[in-house]
Amino acid sequence: MSETPKYAVMGNPVSHSKSPLIHSLFAEQCGIVLEYRAIHVDEGRFESAVRQFRAIGGKGLNITVPFKMAAWRLSDRRSTRAELAGAVNTLKFLDSGKIYGENTDGAGLIQDIVVNLGRSVKESSVLVIGAGGAVRGLLGPLLEAGPAIVHIANRTAAKALELSAVFSGFGPCTASGLNEIGSASYDIVINGTAASLQGDVPDLPTSIFTEDTLAYDLMYASKATAFLVWADENGAAQCSDGLGMLVEQAAESFQIWHGIRPQTAGIIRQLR
Ligand code: ATR
Image 1 (cartoon, rainbow, N blue to C red):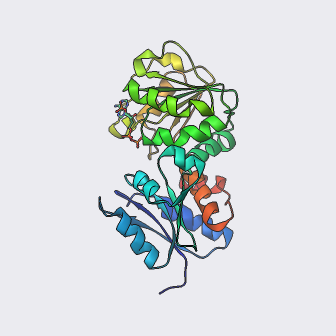
Image 2 (image 1 turned 90 degrees about the horizontal axis):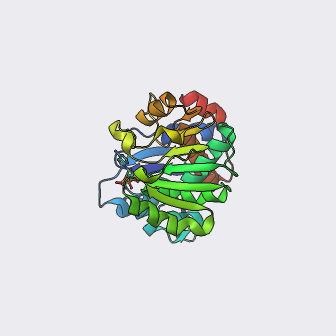
Image 3 (image 1 turned 135 degrees about the vertical axis):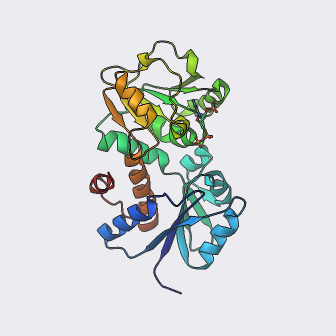
């Protein structure tokens, strides 16, 4: 068995994942020798795939769709953020035999918005569109960043209301259906829906944008997502896809495993 510490990302599909490239660039930068690969896991096989990876010397895993909730269940210990998110994207295998679960998605988003894009979340008004797993994972860190208000708007209003009930203890948080948001405008608008995957744009009024609004799509693709094209055409001042968040959440995972946070700006540029 090779002595090189083994890491991987598990998902389905996973072949498109940029995580192996990002983690090898981080390792090179930090002078750490490691192996990091993408592992395709069939539905229903997640737990056994994790155990098998550990048995061959695996030290940690990133987890992507559709296994983040299964990873949460498999974790013996979780951070408060992961606990609340109900989803885990980073597993660390502890020497004690236990598994530690963390969710670095929200921290990665905040880092990208504040440091890379130079926007303040503190005192800002934030509209979050969507109420699925992706949004649930980022609400804790978003509210911790001290916004004036976070409004969650979702096609199915009940899901948005459910999330705001869970998170309202952490900061000012309201919710509604997409068609109930009125004429309010926001400093930051985050698209956390799966609509961009189908080339769709959530049905929202363009009055959400001002000449200072940052429009952010959690998705990334080789060209601007449907949401970002729409935001740009309808008055958003600044538009960003989720590539920076992807690199930043990876840096957070890297720190959990190796105790050092790599520099990210050069790597985001390189990936573009
Ligand atoms: P994820 O884990 O990626 O967040 P999910 O849990 O399936 O995926 O959630 C998908 C989100 O995208 C939901 O908020 C969904 O809205 P509903 O709760 O009403 O289903 C939203 N969504 C998907 N397609 C959409 C579309 N075409 N327009 C608006 N919202 C959409």
